[in-house]
Image (cartoon, helix red, strand yellow):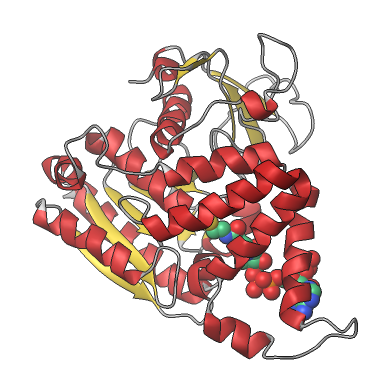
Length: 373
Ligand code: COA
């Protein structure tokens, strides 16, 4: 159990995104509210040994609680929020959807280090009373998974039928399962590898250097570079071709500039640096004797793994997800590879709703059947 897990204050408050948390209504449950909630989870020690004096985690839970139904955890990607059910995975969560909230409780939390309500660089450092900013410590995907478990402990959710997410969310999903394999029936990482590879680290390094040198302008450029890795050659060819816009610039150039501007409006350089760093450090084998032995933990507990690769993903593509699945199978895990076909590339896990619905329903159905057996 993490320090924060042990120290969980079991204190939750309801609030609106972006605003100060309101005190909980008498008798209100922090589960099943379908609203942004905030949990104060006490001190939290990172893999690096640094202790954050006070961990806050923002989350949203939809559907029945653990006394009435199995619970699923979904995890956002790089710049996302806890609002999966109302925003970035909205078509997948709700009554009659892939995560059917009539039958399964669904939790999503803003990642440790994130921008939307959880402790991160824009939070106040209790020791100084000022925002952490550039002083916020480096994180790992494992730290972020442990923060998810600290929240689960505080909410009284001790078992997960499925944990899933894409990209950084898929990396953290793997770590959530590996931290407590006996508590997780199945994990469905999408477009996520066992360990971040050198090409992704190279792209991230350029982004981080842009931010270090240019601040907010660098953040906009970093987003532009990142967007070219989130899409595919065929997507850009089909959407933009060589078309020139009314301002004389290629359409693809104004598209990227727009995406860069949009991120600067809602994000900040320090948070981006911390989250990209967590992605760079992702390696499920670290401290566990390598990737094979790490995955062996899932075999021991009967945790199933379905790796979802996306055709045309140049960032964490099918070969990397297949390698994860192969390593899991070699370690004795009940593992399967599935492929999502889309011209979109990496971002397909945020766009291709009918295919995603099929893969999630399959993983959930198998996990529920295995849990009931
Ligand atoms: N010039 C300028 N702007 C343009 C344009 C052009 N030629 N073509 C499209 N746009 C703008 C649209 O007006 C729209 O603007 P708005 O969002 O302000 O309304 C925006 O680009 C649409 O973006 P697009 O990428 O086309 O949307 P999509 O529906 O294909 O994808 C998302 C949706 C959410 C996946 C995508 O926008 C996104 O945010 N991707 C990044 C996700 C991410 O962080 N992934 C991280 C993985 S680690």
